[in-house]
Image (tube, rainbow over all chains, first blue to last red; front, side, top):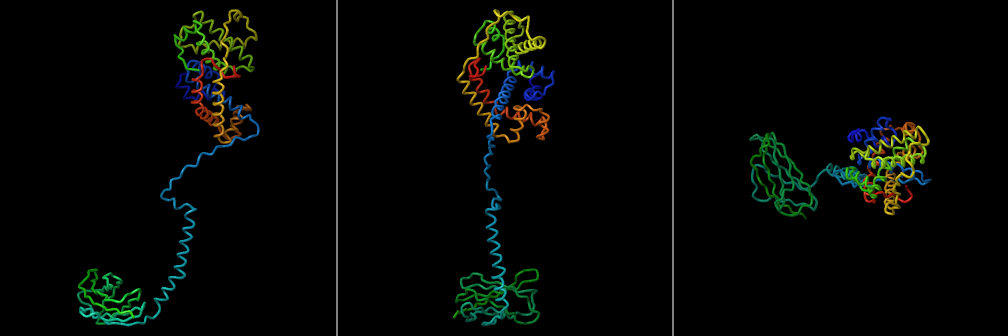
Length: 225
Length: 197
């Protein structure tokens, strides 16, 4: 038996466990007496076995099993899914959803279903208004627009209506279908947190293909009383 | 015990009676002979008798120039031990042993304080290795090595095979071996720990 074979066969362990048959045992011993590596291997294992007997024979006290130190878990992409974090977050989300469904939405629906009362002004879409159209409202009160639309021409399928506040910022947009005959379309503009000043109503035709046509601008002088 | 090459120079020193070389030689091969004999002889006294006789004959052979291959010194010692063992099996007393007057005195094992400390370190290391094992593996080793139960029966009881046992021992040995080698190499030649011959 050479050294490579001794290692391959785990000869050290088998020797100490008396697992080698007599012929293999003799071969290993012949190699062992000549090979310092194997000799040290066997001696180390033998010492372990002898000392283990003494330790394992110690009475009563069970040897504690050392637990490996817990691995540090890097807070990866899904760290937020840990129960300690996720449970309160989900509870909060449920509370928000519940409030929206049972309080906020019903209120909004009710408000939307209420008949709207307020001042109404008429806007002739085809002509550009030079003078501002005066509108007087109370705080929080909206106002109505009656858009006088021409009969369907130039292939407009609808009209886009935009409302700009006195600062020039777009506050509100709507799409109004084109009329088959001359008729007015009514639009109610909610009275959010509006301020007094000159608003700009911009109306432009939109073709069926979505292409925007010419637009007209109509100033509206809003006075909140 | 420092590792030394068993070469021509070593054999020459041995032949010349160099005490340190003899110390090393006896310490190194004593342990291997004891490991070899413990599975073959029942009594510690018989083991010691065969060990002593082996060394006696090896030194005699060296003196007579019978070792033809110095690098095969280990195999020579093993072969001599086999012969002594065979004779022991055949007769309880040997009629062809050398006269007492001619028997060389084997170097005594020195008391080695450093070895005692090293042994303590190694014992602690082995304890650590055992503590890191699962309780089941410790019980397995206890049944096999301490209680000396039949290995197949023990493996069957624990639901493992002999490979498992072999690997368990291998891993434990590997964990222990580096400290063992470090301590062994640091000891003076021929030294053994206090309380052990």
